[in-house]
Image 1 (cartoon, rainbow, N blue to C red):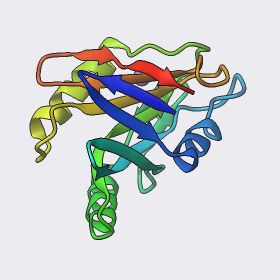
Image 2: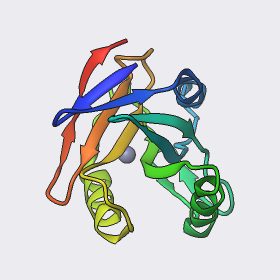
Image 3: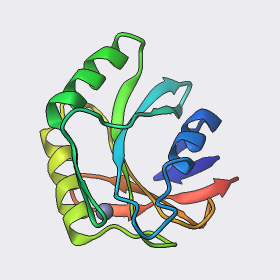
Image 4: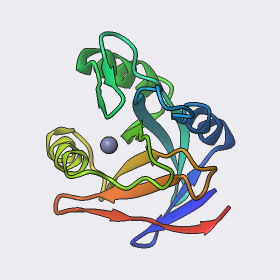
Length: 154
Ligand SMILES: [Zn+2]
């Protein structure tokens, strides 16, 4: 599955899509969950290979997810050794067709500014309850804002 933002193609591997899909909040009581996205850069295409689930002392409610930042830093360091670059975050929403909340946007812009990277854009993925692709929001985070990426293929 491919998304494009400003001429850059992001290819999500099936492993990554399966990991995201399996964490959908399927029932009323399910809590939000999330993690990080890791990619390899291949000949102009950014291949998003892995979606981690942040463990450690993350806090979860039905309407919020506050990841354990130390656990996230450890995941970044560990996967970097395998050539996988941190490229953004994902979390679930208890709605069919997810859109970012103002808090989501605020947090993403802050992460973009604070992270050490040379990316034009980072990714913000939100996993809703509907089957993909309808239930998936893929956003590009820049220094200025968050915009939805265009889906080119499924
Ligand atoms: Zn959210």
